[in-house]
Image (cartoon, rainbow, N blue to C red; front, side, top):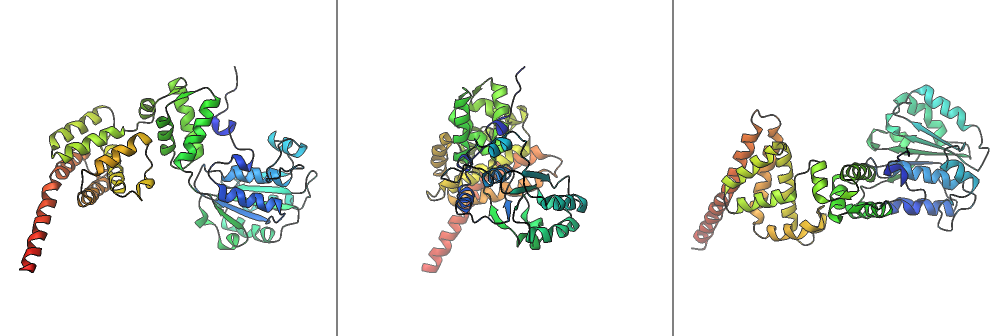
Amino acid sequence: MENFIVSARKYRPSTFSTVVGQEHVTDTLRNAIITKQLAHAYLFCGPRGVGKTTCARILAKAVNCYHLTPEGDPCNECDSCKAFNENRSLNIFELDAASNNSVEDIRSLIDSVRVAPQMGTKSVYIIDEVHMLSTAAFNAFLKTLEEPPPHALFILATTEKHKILPTILSRCQKFDFKRIKVDYITQHLKKIAEKENIHYELDALQLIAIKADGGLRDALSIFDQIVNFSKKNITLKIVHENLSILDEDIYFETMNYLHQRNYKNAILLFNQILDKGFDAYSFISGLLVHIRNLIVSKNPDTMKLMEVTDIHKKNYLNQSQMFSESYLINAFQLISDVEQKIRLTQAPNLSVELLLIKLANLWNAIELILENEELQLKKKVM
C-alpha cells in the first residue's frame, strides 16, 4: 500500500519564492542573505498555519546553501540542501518549546550552541511556540541570545507575541506574518488540484479558503478531507455538506422574507434548517455575518472586505439595495444581542423565532422614527 502524504507536507514550500502570501517577509530575508546582513536572532509572529516555521526552515537551509540562486533561494541540490531535505542535517536544530520549556532544556541548547558546525557556516536553532518557555528558561536564554557565537543563528516562532518577555523581543528582529488572503489560498488549492488531477468547482475552493480563516495549513487539511469525501470531485454542495456550512442562499432567502415583512415564512425556513441538523446558534451567527456583508456591500470601496465566493458577490450587491442602511444597522444590533445570549437561554429556537418576528416588524419601527423626524423638522421650519 502506497504511503499517503498530506498536502500540507507534500506541497510545503522549499524556497522563499514558493511561500504563499508573505512577500513582505520573504523579500526581506532574501535581501539579508544576498547582502550578508543577517541578524543573529529572528522572531516570527502570526496566526497558526501561515508559514512561520516553513520560512524558518527555508532560512536555515539558505544560510548553509553552497549554491544560492541569484534571488537568494536555496538551490535544493547541494549536499547541505539535500541533507536538510532528507532530515539528516547536523546544522539545524528544532526545539518545541511547548514540551521542552524548562531551564534544563534551554541549558542543553546553550551547551550545544558552543559547538561549531561541521558542514556549512551556521548552526541554526529553531524554537517553535517560544512563548511557552517558562520565565526562568527565558532568563537563562537571555545572555546567549544577546551575544551568541558567530556561527549561531536563532529563529523563534510564536502565535502569541504578547506573552514573550520584552527583554527577549528587544534582542530579535521581528517579522509579523499576516493572515493569507482568500484569493492566494484559492489559487494555491487550484494548482494542487490540477497537479493531482482533481476535478473542482472554483467556488468550492473559495469556500474552503474562506473557512480556513487565513491559514494555509488549515485550508490544505480541509482540502484533503473534501478530496477523500468527494472521490476527487470537489463541488460547492459537497463542501457545504461536509463542513456543515449553511448555504448562503438560505440567508438570501431569509432576508427576502424579512423585506416582505413575512415572518411566517422566515420562521418556517428556520425550522427547515433545524431539521437538517443545524442548531440555532449556527443560524444566528451566519445571519449576523450576512447582515455585515450587506452593510459592506452598500459602499463600493468596502466591498473588497467581503470574503465570499464570486457567485455571491453580485447577489449581495443586489440585495443590499433592498434595505436601508438604518435597517441593516438596527438589525445587526438586534442579532448581535441575541447571539450573545442564545448560548445561555433554555429555549434558543424560540429566541430566534422571536428575533425573526422583530426583524420583520423593524421596518414599521424605522418608518415611525422617520415620520417623527420629518414632523419635528416641519415644526422647526414653521
